[in-house]
Image (cartoon, rainbow over all chains, first blue to last red; front, top):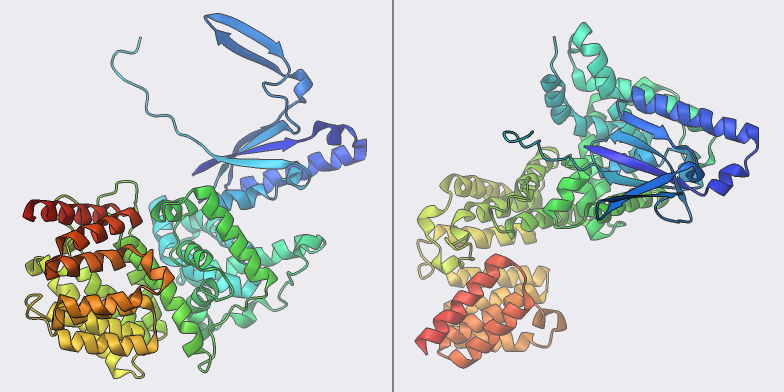
Length: 124
Length: 408
């Protein structure tokens, strides 16, 4: 099974870090990814830039609407994601519990929804 | 060349036993699971070029133990894992006898009375039977997230309460074995009472329970273990006949006895003989003896109800529960007529728990029906219907209600 582990934290906690702390956290995350890769659990993942660089797009009545900032104002912001391969939800939760920001943020673990096969025949 | 299928097969074959041993060697559930995973990753990397080792399980245990110890050393500074102590001598505890008993240790730990019953069931199905959280959740009709949390909680409790990872000593066994048997029987019943043909359920809890009990009997040949085996086998023999074409429950007296599984009955009877040879005779053996009386008879009328009443009385002396009293009353009604059964049921109404039990009202309804009291029968059937959400049971009760309407 594939699971997305979505990493949320309060960006102001990160902004309050000094350079050394920020460096150590990143190194710790990299080591974690190495370990997950070695165990065959890591499929993909990426850290995200802060929400101040986010833009949201929606289309209403055929019109494209762009707004700056994230879709929802929340206390914690989406900071990155991991795509994990795990035997079941408990294993995914166990892996997620060792993602460093779990200590000060929240990791939401969601099973991946596989899309149905592409319709064949009348595709243009 | 080793294919993924080979590894997959070896995983199914060995992973539970390897896990059981790693938990003992490393002293921690989650660490052992991680070590097991790493051992299999190493196997996938090494076996294709080096060949499958002569004793794959031993190889996996050694590799897992080494990886686990590395983990402990790496984590030892972190306070979170202060409970972990790296074992000094890896090879010391790898003797055969200990390894053979590890699955039993795991089962007794998963079924420890210090855990809540629903935690025991969840843990046993995931750790002993090797089902995924999602499979267990589907089989128990629960949300995966709820079940995942229950498993995490149970493991934490094992750690924090210091629940020992061991098979109880012989003197402790009579006290501890019932908790294990209860979980297995609960799993069996959970599967047995579900409607067949539910496409969402991809595992059979009944089969899991039966395999678990067989494994237990090999390691711990106690009378009650065989009693439980006999009980499950004799129930399972009637599985097909228990359901009508419309998915409704067919009561014992109306079942087509030709559809009972003769091989299951024969094996069940053999288990029962093994159970009866080992004293003392406990509640599972008594229940299996009752089931045996039913399968021995050619029809409901030809059943030795006198002996069944006697067996229920013996069972009630060991476990004075209102549910057993209810079954005894139903057997008395078969022996002495519905009025005699109704008098016994009336005496049971003082128990709060039983008046909310749908089978109590279904039994009352049945006896009123047979005694020629259609009005009381209807009220009791309606009461039973209001108390159950199990589809096969509901269909059966609705059929009875419809029959009452046409006959009166």
